[in-house]
Amino acid sequence: MKPKAAIIIAFIVAATAIVLLTTRGKKHEDGASGTGKTSGADAGGAAGGGKPSAPAVEITVLYSSEKKAWLEAAAVDFRQQHPEITVSLQGKGSIEAASDILDGKVKPTVWSPADSMVLNMLVADWDTKYHTPLFATSGDDAPQPLLLTPLVFVIWQDRAEALLKASGGTISWKVIHKAVTSNQGWPAIGGQAKWGFVKLGHTDPTRSNSGLQALYLMSLEFYGKPRIVMEDLLKPDYQEFIKGIERGVTRFESSTGTFMDDMVRFGPSKYDIAVVYESLAIGQLGNAEGRWGSLKVYYPSTTVWSDHPMGVLQADWVTDAQKVAARQFVAFLRSRPQQERALQYGYRPADTSVPVKTADAQNPFTRLAQQGISVEVPTAAEPPDGQVVRQLMMMWQRVVQR
Image 1 (cartoon, rainbow, N blue to C red):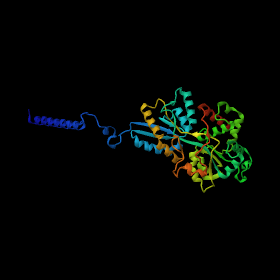
Image 2: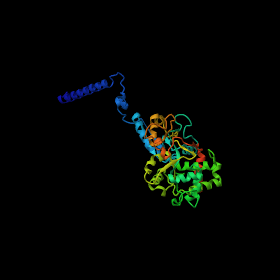
Image 3: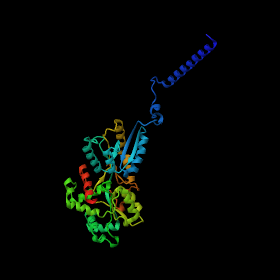
Image 4: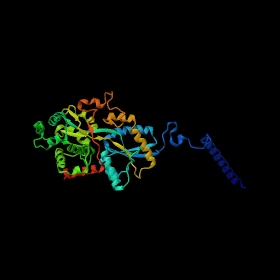
């Protein structure tokens, strides 16, 4: 063998020996326990307080925008406790969201509209279109309420006093109907001529949940019963009653917050009466002080709850792993700490074991009692079935918008 070839062979042998020794040493370090498995810290970052290098699962939560602040704060806390789950929050109006889910434009893991009326409507529409259930009817995946807030009237106090006197002590849809349909304006029910015509504010029932709730309550008061059926929507005298009330609405906004902002910003020149969520009123009452007089909350004799149900979709795009993660998120939102936090945002906890009235000086249900906020709420109507909700919207479009 030539000297040069011998040198090359010797170098290769030496290099191979070094590699083998290094590999054996590394195996010894990694497998010191004798199992040869990767440690928990390296696999997911849980051991030793580290974070996982990648989420185990991601869920998409489509929710009504009214509860954005509460939900975002809760999601931050949830992430700290469950770093293996990524929660993607998407806010959208309830009626628009229902339409987008039905048409396949959005494919959430979990959906939480503002109330069960819109949820019932989507369930019925989904069954008609696809002949499969969108939600479970029982168990952890079935829709469960997260927050509660009733629909209320927000009225400038001097206007409210005229309405109360005309209706015998309760703000009713019938006295509002009388006020807005009269060409005499406010003097028709004992108000001042300088107030002009009666200006009512509520959102478009075909685009906004609070407007749909307002339409439902008008219907219930007209018939004087706790629920309405399909046949009720077809009667001419009822339709004229609805049409008369809607004469008082100068513009049907798509967002409850928009006209509530305008009510505070422009005062009674824009709106005398607004129909809004109690939670929204709580957030705005303080802003009205010192601007246009006193703005107060009044509860209709029959109200309706926004119960913010949250359910895990049983659609084919939701995986088993996502369902497990979604159940954990829903349970977290319904836990006592998150339910107690709801009070800070003007909501009533859906968990009945959590008191609404507390010793906290900042609790809005005690702090705003002088502005009409009450712990006690009048009778709340049950939501109609999905087909009635759909036909209620169609009736309004035919009668009011034609």
